Image (cartoon, rainbow, N blue to C red; front, side):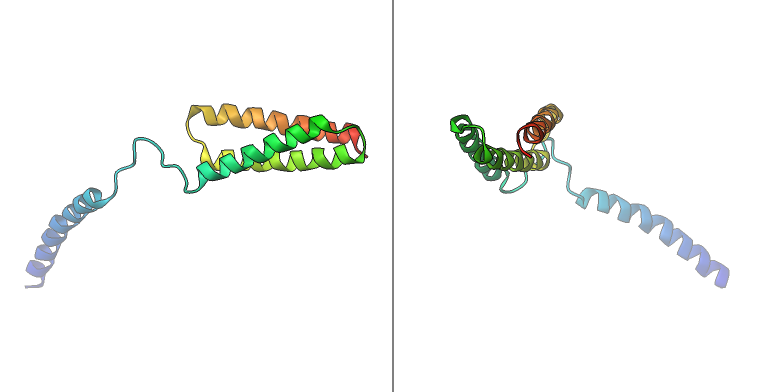
Length: 118
């Protein structure tokens, strides 16, 4: 009697497990063909881009001195923020190229701060 029960249990499990696995696969959402953009990314990128354009224009009008050092530091912080937002929001093959360009820009700004400001 026990042997018959164990055998029936094994057959039952052998039928249920694959069926449950198949249902789980059907119920799982399919991965999208194109990556979904994070909410708020478009707005964040636009805001940081506008801020960078404003700081760039301000830097062109300033003369060397303490004021240009503080503006350059603000520009450095905005570029770092822009790099972080880009890393979170951009996808695809252009992302790596843009991040590399932003890393080089941030490094260049940091070197300018070290050279001009003490």
